[in-house]
Length: 412
Image (cartoon, rainbow, N blue to C red; front, side, top):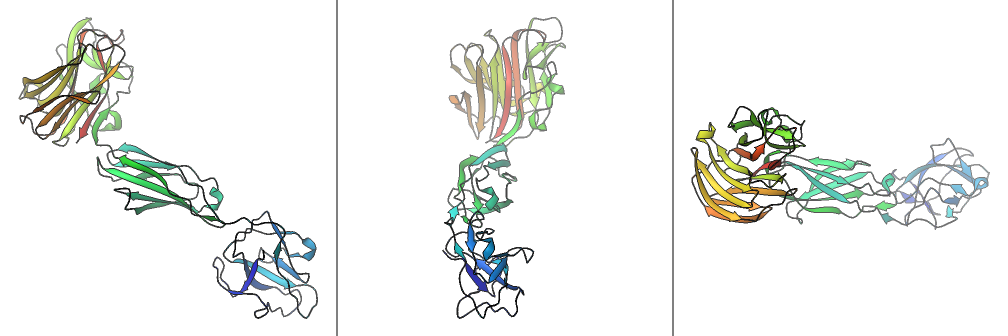
């Protein structure tokens, strides 16, 4: 295979006129360099290969600092592929003319596609999805990456480009609860063509409006605790005694007392934040002991005080009784019950109350158990949580009854 020398070409392009008997290199004097270009039209000349030059010529690949001639064969060339690389050529031996070609002493590497990156999309919030991808195995040949986004997996638009070896991007300003599709490819150069598209299909932004995982120091009262992500604040809405409160223990919250325990107590706290009118509240409740205690989560939680509150709530007792209820101006009404059977200590149960229009529903572990139609409470609000414990004690004592492991308030 012959490399091609051209005159009049442009570095980085595939133009110019091939040197031939009709277009010779014209050298006016010995050891006087002329400029030309060299390229490989039918493959890729790797830097670990070599070539020969006609006996009367020398060639430089570094602007004239170092020249290689016939005595230096086989000559190791830089990477040469389908676009022009600048060279300087000079004649060192007197001759009226010379001919020959730069020829290979081995095989050449054909154009190959870069390996396809593996893309992962991670939901961060209701308006942000983080993307990460594997660096392609031939990253030295890739000038960067192109990332595209689609609302349906078929109509794609450019999202951003990244430089070589950059493998992350945060997509912000997204619409809550919306499904997005992403793909990424490595942009080829040299002997490498573009990679295939690495995809992560069907990624939906979170529609979480408020959330808390209760990561904090043991003993911190819920009113002094900052919710996960910093959105909203907790306030205690109902506290039957001056010594009881919801406090953190092992990154959960439970009803405790500061003195005089054990006693039976129920403490209700509210997480602020005005959700959509269509909303849902969830609590991951951990059963420490099966003792008849209950845990509650509420949405559309509004009102200036506990006595004036409005909400839809789902309550789960450790005996397995699920209750869906409403509270209007402080007045409680049961909307339905479901018997799930006695719960198991050491297990976590996700309780969800959902209000979409007038459809009010209660779930356990993602399974709908109660569904009613009601229009008494229509306005979105914050999240309500209560934990009742029969035999509540100091937070430093062994946990009994329920603990809340995490809560979430959704815009639906």
